[in-house]
Length: 255
Image (cartoon, rainbow, N blue to C red; front, side, top):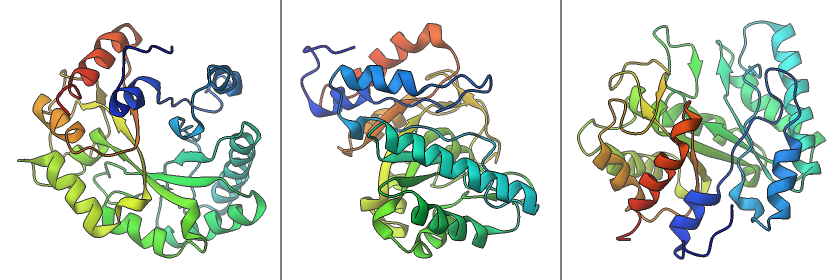
């Protein structure tokens, strides 16, 4: 994967940032993917492992929260065993937002070093999706005991469908809102993807770049803001990855 032709830092981040589920739906362990990439001398801060979708710390059911906590701790152990320090999770769905910070605090006591990264969510029609606004994410962060071990991943589809900023000038206002409501120091990465659903739809449906409702110039605007972070392309069509990566890198050439 390594190539010397990408010389500026933004292009390197786009090319080499790596995100994958730690364990797939088929129970295949993906630790080997990260270990292989580490052997290629990539920096550990260029990895943003994704936690399992079954983690639901806000569930209304005790049995689901308990299982989610065990899974969170397990995946934090896996991350730490590979020498990495970030684990991206969806906060969950339910009426127990206080359980999200309580369980993260408990997990921090068990597993040292690992930073739990909360992904911005698109929301849903009934309002039960936790983490579907910057204000709600900030509320969780404020209740985390170790502020150095909590972060945020901005998903471009989720924030677009969630209406996190005005539709016009979306990317610039998105980052302005993040800085104002949460703070840049908590930003650990981006999931870059287009949206199959319209602005403020509250529906989570990803699309390949330039195949959705997100304007192309909004992606360009995002990269032009010179945000030093992990950028992970997150779309569903592997046959288009090379094209999409090249397209995203092209947005950085004038930086």
